[in-house]
Image 1: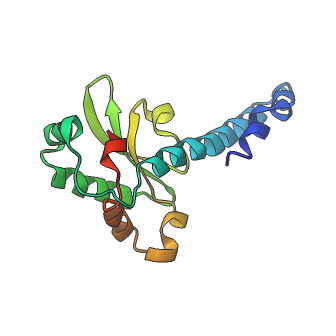
Image 2: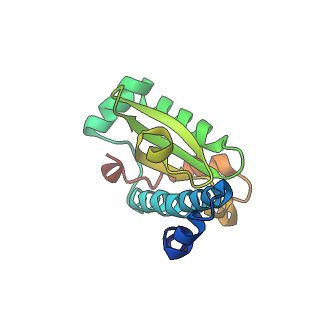
Length: 158
């Protein structure tokens, strides 16, 4: 993903933009979203996982989860359901809505980055592309999403 991004924004793309057709722009934009979004999403994903993670968040994040979802268990259930229900490839997200000052659970398709597509600040992203879980969980996406809570580093999420 990262290796392909410079080609999408470099000289090759600049030259293609002057062709006068919208289709080169569309393909360039899709390539930037896919490769750039994949880099952003995975950069967030790897920082929120830890072999010493798990449990529940504390402090302000715990309070906000209780305020917006009722309880940590209700939040977790909702996050598992929404992330597991993504059609095809994508991401489950816990994001911060600056306008409403609330946490929201949303999903994005493919490698669409959360903030660029929804305006939400990404706090927790769960990769639900098959490559993330198939070797260990086969087609049991919901089990993978549930088990990922065992390694979430809530300090980095907050």
